Image 1 (cartoon, rainbow, N blue to C red):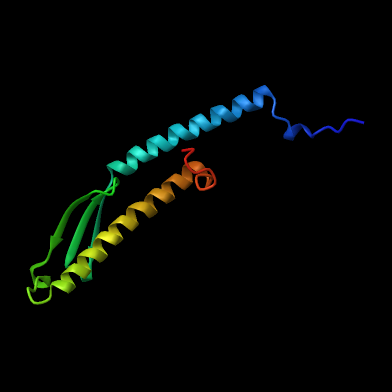
Image 2: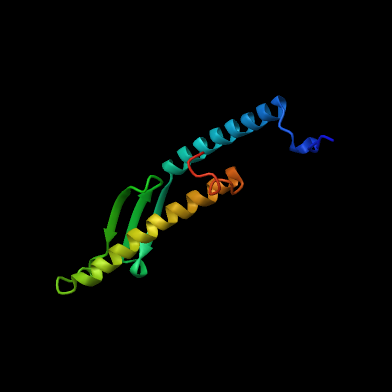
Length: 117
């Protein structure tokens, strides 16, 4: 007696074509979202607002504005810490935003199939 798989488990040519079309649509949507994300700009404040970092969706720092009151030649370490915190927060914001937007398109599948999209 030959075992038969239920119909939903068989992958005939028409279901394979449908899957390929769906994957292609998803890939197009991912490319569109990536382009939109890269065009975005973010403004992050650090150190209570004494440092403002502007970054784009490509994770390129566009500018860093520093309030004069944080600049103390005798305390460069504090300025360095605030700048580092601002840049790290800016990068994290871009990455979090990108992950959230991509998850909407891929339905959370992006992490399961790295490199596919």
